[in-house]
Image 1 (cartoon, rainbow, N blue to C red):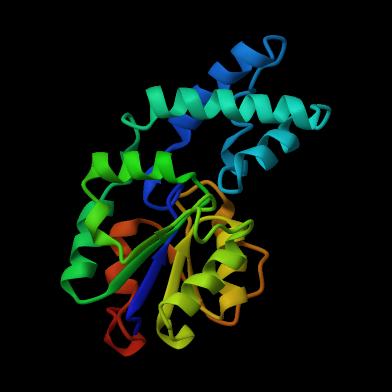
Image 2 (tube, rainbow, N blue to C red):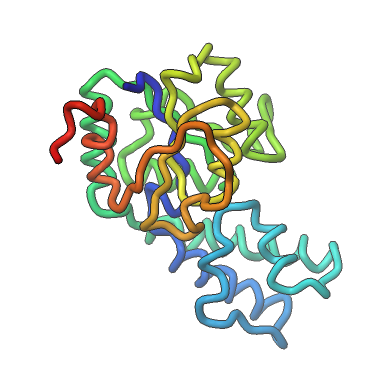
Length: 224
């Protein structure tokens, strides 16, 4: 059904929430010692860029305070959390199977390139993707995932009818809708699988990444 598969990273391929929580708490201890991160408060917000997440959690922070928190978080995350990040069950095997089946794989993430590169290297996934697109790429930055998806479509001449975006959050669903791609919502992730976003083509539900190959089969070939 699809020749091209675009994956989100956090909450779709990797279970990064423990590391993100750990590094954000460390950043708070350093920059805002009077504040705490309530249990469960971060999970539904993971996906968009960190500055927006922090602003949503603590609306009274100034732009300068948010910038300082982001810097402290990134330093701690690179030093402590990247190497501890784990893939969701079946993620690596699924990616390898899709590559073996001749699919072109892409990664579209809001995670900065330095963090993304460390995680992909630790998991042995660097060579699986035709392109890894991050918001801070010097030559091709993007402010929103919708723009990143459109840029990927243009750079690689992706046929929307043959392209599926797999993600767990609303910004993933909006990116798919904006580029005309089909969307598969990862219900095991953090972002509610993009519910509430109107899409012309939505597959799913995707309850585990290992189920993706069967979801990609034409409807007539799926088991009842």
